[in-house]
Image (cartoon, rainbow, N blue to C red):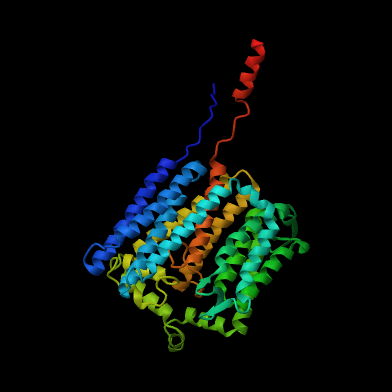
Length: 460
């Protein structure tokens, strides 16, 4: 005899609270460790920074209990820990350059963290159902492509170190490509939900690979031309790779056809090869990638060489927080924050750090599997893949797997635009996971309101 019983979904908020306490404790311990190693005493700024970070974490957790009680309990602690560790390393670099808390970047990073977390909290409160975003599919596409091309506007876009990926308004600068990846993920999810049936139709079979019909190649060709345009006009390999890779990945998830992946890789490879033949800035990046320690490469830039030597000096276990020399590498707090960590926490510590990103991506993909609607599945998978691809591009660049790019490590790197984008991404994943894990009402269960009305009728 088989008994079927309904299982109630666990909210997981107490688990989240315990993990958040553990994450804040790790951040506080690392902050103290840096102060003791560099200055020989517990840093006096611990109270101010620790209180601010604790308030941000508590506010987000309370919002989760009230607005998204069934959301995944691991996503917020992982993002909190990564954000906190990035703050610790930025403070460590401030101390190495003799900058006080008021003068340094750590306080600004804490302020940007508070603003980004506040934006994510607002998104959770306002967006009660992620499926509403599907109504704005083509508006999201227009906004996303507009943000990608915004740095090309004369007088607004600025070129830094060969790449034109920033906009400047007065004293403030912003990288619109960080926001564009989220908006474009919404567009791709909405578009592919509508068109995946047509894109899944098989065409001719060549060399054991079933290719799509020629008339269905339009979307991927448009995405390819736009990504090549970003690569050529903005001189930014990272944004081009992230944008096109996101589209191809979501196209594969929607259609389950490997032929789209093969076509996408072929098109991107052709674009990069042509760009390397025609543009000097791409040739410089390739030179630094293939022959980092040659005289010609070092005369061009020794940034990558310094980062590699810093990680090599850290070895397996690292020099210890506060005991290395990561400040010798240019942009150690942003583009090269991974070598900064690698030098001081070693290869083992760096693997542990990367494992946090693996867990974050896994929880995002798990959310995609559990989502009950096609749009939510594609959006969660796209957001998770964008984090994975961005981590690969950044880590691959500083370890010579691929040429260097202008992207920053999510949550770790210094910069307001990156924090705003990635905390918003976390808010969307939390909203989708809340919908996916929320128990479905049992249609066979009695309706208490209807039962009361029946009883009233019987009494009468």
